[in-house]
Structure formats: structure tokens, C-alpha cells
Length: 362
Image (cartoon, rainbow, N blue to C red; front, top):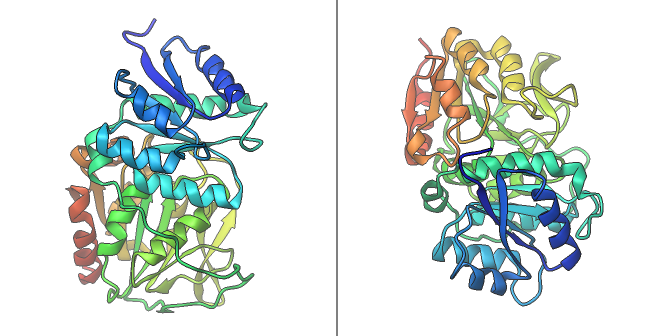
């Protein structure tokens, strides 16, 4: 038996879903459901007397929706929140907003708002609840982004025109990897990166399919640099940030003398796809000492091997420090390799990227 149980408050407007979630969590000895809430108003009232370690939260609810409730609870009583989200386009947008507001992570409801088959994702939910229970609530609240409207954009075109400039042999290539807590962290780091850098950027955030386009649009609205969800064959260009699509690996390749990204669904690495290590392994082959590798908050070990490769090839490496991480997993694994040049608080990482991306390769 575990030393202590993880206390969970389940929030969903559907009586049926509350029962399914509660019963499913009851299968795990280390979980205790200490209460349920029917909407945001009920949730905030329950927090007056209950002290959960983790909250599961639906977004679409009457009286007060999940986003409004999340914003208020992160001010009133910061608590790790796992969003149970639907995959519809509007659900994806709302989920990204929830991550900005301080939600730790999210799990997809397999069949929409009422999912009879929720058991399909139970292991994912259990894993994320365990991680949430260990999270630094202080860091989560400190780096929560204010709610921002998504940029107005038309339909996605099959082939977007290339922005930025062609990659020169002297350009640095900055790779940023993140997982749990990463969306909030990236929303803090990306706006601080100078648009005048002669550098290209590859972003790998652990995320399922259907969410990275919305996330790329939000990042794009926060910076003068161009941020886009990567498509197969996209050229790596100065001034452009390519975000690995959800549930797909992003690898660097060469086509007709140009460095491009290829997208694939090869097996997961460290249990994740996209994988930071997969992207780094392919990028180091081409960029060697020109690379700057950055590992932000997240659970697991993804990125540590890649950071070692960058270091051994003469590149520079950064890891977020424990004090500002929501989950000090990936950065810790990177630091333990002995191949991290700078361990920094999140607030300093953008400036450090600017410095390293401007420096001459030795």
C-alpha cells in the first residue's frame, strides 16, 4: 500500500461521466476521490472545505465553464488540474487556453463529452494524475499566462509559403524540448527570444494529435518570429520556429541542398511521440556545433540523450532549474548527464538563448 493516497476532486457536468471517472480512479489504491463537482461554481465552493491534491476538470459546463473556474481557482487556491478534453477543433482551442491558464496537462476523452470508452485512456490519466500530485504548484501559478485570444486566421493551406530567410552555414539552430508544464513555459520563453537572431528553431512539445496547430497559433501571436506547426518537407529557415505536430516525430533531412523536416509516426521513444531525442538525433548530424539545446519542464527522460549528443558535438545546452519547473523530470535527466552548460530559472532562459544564438561557434 502507498504511504499516502492522492486526493482527487472530479469535476464534470455529466452525472454519468462523474461516475465513470470516480469508479475508474477507485481501481487504483493510491487514489482517493474526495468529492465531485457539477460545474465551476460547485468546484469553487467545494474548495472551501476540500483540499484535493489534483482536480480533474471538464471544460464545457453550465453556470461556470472550466476555463473561468480554472482562472479563478489558480488565483484563489492554486491546485494541479488535469483537463479531460474532447478532440473537436473548438475543444482543442479551449484546451490550449486551459494550459495557458495553469492546467498541468490534459487527457482526451475518446468519444467526445460523453465517452463510454473512457477506460481506453485510463493509463494515460493515471500517469498524469501521479505527475500532477508531485508538481510544484508555486511554479505552475508563477508562470501561468494571462488568457489571450487566439489570433484570427483563415483555413490552413495545404502548403504555406516559407517565411524567414534561407539557412546560412553560420546560423545557429535552437531546439527546445518540453512536456508537462511546457505550454506555460514556452509562452514565457518564446516572447523573450529576439526576432533579430540569425537562428532557426525546432520546438518539440509532447502533445497528442489535433492540438499543436492551435498551440502554434498562440505562440505565433506572442512573438515577431514566425511559429508554425511543421508539415512534411518544411524548410528549416532563419527566423522560423517549427513545432513538431502532435503524435508525430519530427526529423531533420536534406532535400536538394536544403535542410527540411520530415514527419513520421515511427514507434514511440520513451513512451512519447513526438520525441525530443528523435529530433535531436537527426539534427545533430547536420548542425553539430551550431546547435543550442534547451530542455524545459516535463516528466520522464526524453531529451537527455540528445543533450549529450549536442554537447559532444560542440553545441551549447540549457536546462530549466528545479525551482521553476512544474515537473523536474526531463531537465533533471539532462543535468545528470553532466552535459548541460547552463541550469537556469525559466525567466532567464530566453535571454540565454539570445546570447548563445548570437555567439560565434568556436
